[in-house]
Length: 303
Length: 282
Ligand SMILES: Cc1cc2nc3c(=O)[nH]c(=O)nc-3n(C[C@H](O)[C@H](O)[C@H](O)COP(=O)(O)OP(=O)(O)OC[C@H]3O[C@@H](n4cnc5c(N)ncnc54)[C@H](O)[C@@H]3O)c2cc1C
Ligand SMILES: Cc1cc2nc3c(=O)[nH]c(=O)nc-3n(C[C@H](O)[C@H](O)[C@H](O)COP(=O)(O)O)c2cc1C
Ligand code: FES
Image 1 (tube, each protein chain N blue to C red):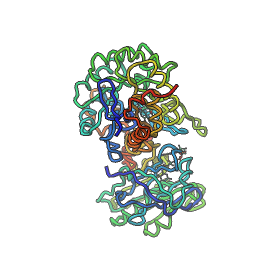
Image 2 (image 1 turned 45 degrees about the vertical axis):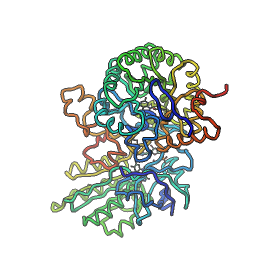
Image 3 (image 1 turned 90 degrees about the vertical axis):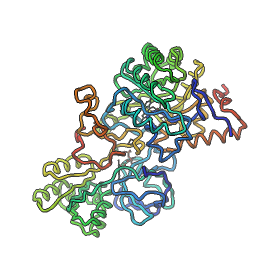
Image 4 (image 1 turned 60 degrees about the horizontal axis):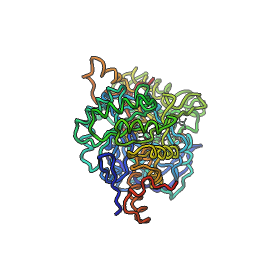
């Protein structure tokens, strides 16, 4: 067996394959279809201090090789998450990374603090990149000053490994990666969804109730890869790569471009076994190529 | 959770009316027998195009190991499915969702179908019949070609009322009109439960009628889906419950229970809902 262990800050993952926030519910939804114990980590749906209802429907629209969504960060809130969802997740042999967000810097810090005080959370992923809410989310990720403030505020109150999840809806993503690293983030994850639009030409109405939504799936993969490659050159902290990963080959591309770990997102929806197939696939690739340690592959693209 | 991912072989696949297809497929023994109103998430293509699975209702369990779906070609996904042939294998998740309930105290069931909304009502009619309930079925469509499965329902021996918008078959007009004509003269000896499936606009009117005549009504809803299993939160439907954000900030914050969410999920909380729960303008 090849050595698939990777480190994200102080967090050791048995393999580099995770499932992305918002595409795997709170884990329990997928347990009938995939063995949660095999995963490197589960990144849970974004959690805020209070429950949030989310956006009006329609919330999704399929596009060529992708989908637009405007869920609007619907979630059960920190209290119910800890009580109902986390206690279930803790029973599995995998790492739990909790994705969090707030509408103010204070709120971000509060959720982080609450989770730091809770057993069973292995790391925090800071979502400063959701394009689907008016307040909070992406505005923290597309303004350098806000990014700095929110990462620093959370860092101060939270002793867990901290991952900053960046928005691709910026001109130069490396600027934001450097800021996050500078404020003490232990890792960077990218990319979140790209802001998009689709129109119904019969009714002349937008396909989503919120007009715009976040584009995900294979359609965004080349953009994600490009950004990971750029960020990998700009920072020293590890990168968690995501954006359209559907297969072993996709995952390997991300790792070769500079990602230490990867997350499967939209692919979970149409193939709940994607992560499992990728873990097996990476293993056989390494065996076939005679590679003993996955670290040899990270950033291993010849360019 | 009793749902599974499984592979099923297509046994028959025929166009029963222009753009309407009936597909029978194998139901492997390890898969739970579906309940009326439940659905499958079917990977319609041979590759990842279209990307997402499509939700389709269970239409008939024709034997212990064969299940049928009845669908209408709407767009790309259903068109791709209509090209799949005998012997091909389909990748499926299911059975999913909560099906129809049959309250034990009822003795009459009124079923209302619009177009392909007839699909999940057949197994429901079968179950109602086994439970010894009297059944009236109202079917509506734009024209004669939208009226499906009439003979199958007749063979169950239930009363059928048909309407078409162009008057090419049955009574001219909307199904909700013939429904209201019938309900206006209620039989007070009967305890009635209504069930409806069809376009949202029809369901809205059926719900209004049910409310006006104080009849309980279940509706089977559709919303666009990505996962089908409650993970993506994409298939939200608005309920009459007040926004939890308002309540959290307001005085009544303690009243919030897990059930008082503003949005419910069609795939997990439904697709069958009590009509009273739904905010039809949401
Ligand atoms: C629980 C459930 C059970 C269903 N059961 C059946 C069934 O038994 N038989 C059947 O024919 N259809 C059924 N449907 C509807 C079916 O899933 C859609 O028609 C199908 O997904 C359309 O896919 P498409 O790629 O062909 O169309 P698309 O190209 O995706 O869309 C074509 C058009 O159909 C509309 N549309 C697509 N999906 C939906 C949807 N889910 N709800 C409302 N409008 C939609 C779009 O707005 C668009 O105008 C069901 C839907 C749900 C949610
Ligand atoms: C339906 C849906 C919901 C999502 N919810 C969240 C979320 O709550 N928090 C977050 O940081 N990212 C969220 N994302 C973004 C994904 O985690 C991921 O970054 C993005 O979809 C790109 O990966 P993919 O193309 O493999 O899906 C969501 C994506 C989708 C499709
Ligand atoms: S379709 Fe994903 S939650 Fe219902």
